[in-house]
Picture (cartoon, rainbow, N blue to C red):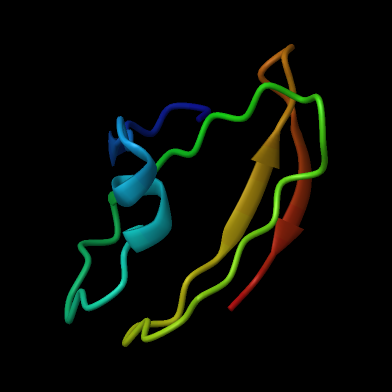
Length: 71
């Protein structure tokens, strides 16, 4: 994003989607998780058992940030 590079894990299984970053005690500022949705329905996210504050950012098909939900 801009001139910054981020290391993002992409969940590959339904279980990885469900777990997300649950249970993580520490997350470097340049790391995160990228969830890819097909756009057929509104994604539902929750932060059950998440130990760290997380920002959620929505990016559209044109790679534009369209929503930011700060922690």
